[in-house]
Length: 364
Image 1 (cartoon, helix red, strand yellow):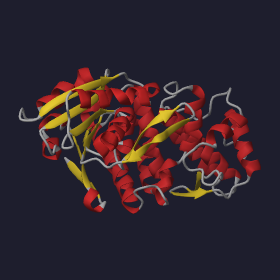
Image 2 (image 1 turned 90 degrees about the horizontal axis):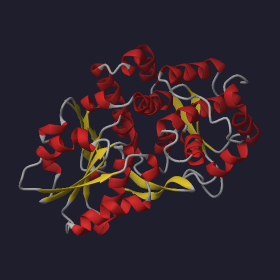
Image 3 (image 1 turned 180 degrees about the vertical axis):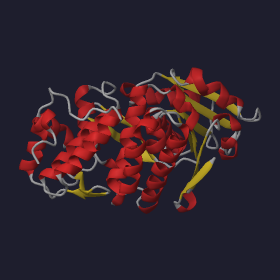
Image 4 (image 1 turned 120 degrees about the vertical axis):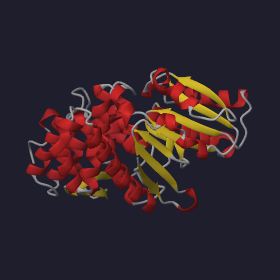
């Protein structure tokens, strides 16, 4: 087992990464009272809920809530199902919420923990690659609104993150690809050597080679921990972690949450960010081809939906959280391994990217 730490002073916490660790009781020491609520979904519950419950001592009363599975259920109505369980079972301020699931479960559980009695502890047990390398680390929690993704939420750090790599063996191929979008992101924005590692081993990663996945997860979490330690509440460098997300969130909102997996939308959004970066003269057409190749190798979409118009993109991007004082900011590539948050881009070039469709990367 490998251990990382997110260094945030009195809010610091460990990330445990290893095989078959869900059932080993590692999280027990992070349950502060004698009550816990496990939040999971109808897909994950039959696979791992019993093992997790059995790992918690009988002296702790464990309740559970099983949510429907899907991004379309990440809303205030379903958030209330968590509060219902907490209140019906009289959980107090010493309770601990445990998120057992992917990014939707983790985000909703964290937000419920941030809000319940003005803040209680929670633990992340992510079961998808995307949640293991991204959403479970860093304390960003929330739910979606029909007009924008993750627009209602809070920063609330977990007590620990427990990443069991063996759970990926039950992950659908589409979910594996979606998670790889976030893994690839780290190489593009922060560490070209890591991107080279991914390029060299992409077939093994997609084939669920446990050693390769453990290394990729460790480096991804290491990069995110470093960034979050510098900028917990996304006032600066942490925004770089959103490469492709402004375009991607627009795709999700336009298509309907759950129609495109988050990582799939980020994949197409990353290609759009690379295309615009090239049109601005920051990266070369060879760099864009490289981005396209690694995304395709991970079986990710590289083009936005054919029916989405530039106006639809701009309307939805205008409600992105990175918009400041009415000014759109995008995460773009200065080079492979170096990203910037920029509002200093040509609207004409942005329009060219939005209009490119399946010609992304061909005109720079």
